[in-house]
Image 1 (tube, helix red, strand yellow):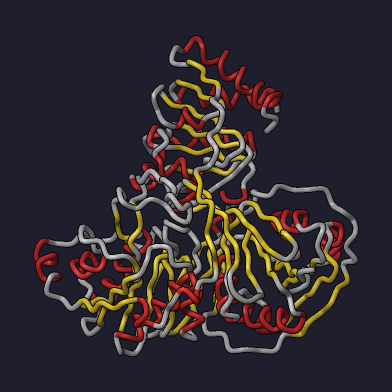
Image 2 (cartoon, chains in turn brown, cyan; image 1 turned 180 degrees about the vertical axis):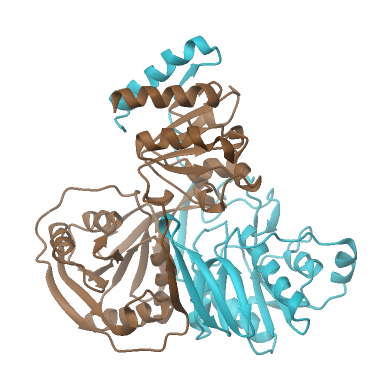
Length: 318
Length: 263
């Protein structure tokens, strides 16, 4: 049976849901988890509930802040010492940065951002989007193990805990290594909303919003739903929204359970970035807009009139 | 200062994707090729550095198929890069092969490396792996997805946005590898004199085998490339007439709650 390690990042012990999504999908395998720095008993308990047999906690004074060089070096030593065949991580900012470097240390393959996967014995088969989701491809590994996989958040979905992991904690003192790229400062976001890539609900605005001065009506709808706010490329390129808000092929690829597109016509590169949303609501004055082809619920109407009334309606029922 | 910028040619983002007959990639005959959008920011960053340090040399490097109609390397040289290396290969190399080929191409230029700039990902396979693998292969530090780039001599201060809009501020010295994202700068257009000059700038061309890469280096097998399943047709409501809006939003809110069960 394949030996599997799941790397989980955390912020002060808070682990990301994608770790549990991965563990849930691996419930019929023997899986260990590793993290850098203490997770705390709540997260350890949760990981055990989702099947973690051993929980490796890597510590070192050189690892107090994230560093691709330092993290990769300590993970490499763990993977070698324990002989893991597969290493999984969420396809998060950290996972995307760290895992390619780690895979390269082993001259081994890595598949990025799978949205589904299965094992046939020890043979991994994954499904991953390409061209921002315009097409899907099956991916398999060639060459020697270990093999590395990142998984897109929100794609696998949460499963019920199995309560069969021992969750045995194993502290590891990392050997210091040279770190050349150092985080000297962290600027915390003022927003307490989840990132677009992890959001459960997204309200997005497009060219129809005309100006950033009109974001108030989008903000109000988002507040009622606890949603994160996105924007189309047209609005970003017009300088009315920052790139960090852009959804689409040259922005963020998202898969929330609810995506509300306000004044977005649905250019092919935008659709590519949000088509895997579970439910899509579109509000647009043009009944021929391509976004309506993908919308579960399409409202042909003026967003400046429809959005405020929708906000009021949702306030009543939520 | 020797700056290397890795660029890739990718199908334009407006391309309608069609799987190839053998389903291992997409049909490329009708594709309009462009420079990977994120790589434009990398080229511009190199030019901004050269703008302040005229002694800087910018080499653009590309691994990929040769198309007569478009050449991202000539575009980059028209923008102001000094010379170029092209390694001819199929368009479906995996990230490991691509990074190994880029390493070989950079070494072919025969210059010491101060800075390697890349786009954060290519918008074809969307792997976001190559810059970090390349950094490891070159034994260099890397910072990825950089949206702010300041430099003073060989000290770089780089900002990288992570989840939720928080920002990691990195301090790193050259030589290093930096992958960049949108928002970093505004790529310039090539001027007409620039385009004329670019035709005379040196472009070295090699086969993939000359940089030590073969099919044996392939780590990932792609198959069954297919279009995502179409969604069933949704419900559409007319709210152009203001009188209908209340009725429509009330119905949609109920559907979201009771049919879709997402709120």
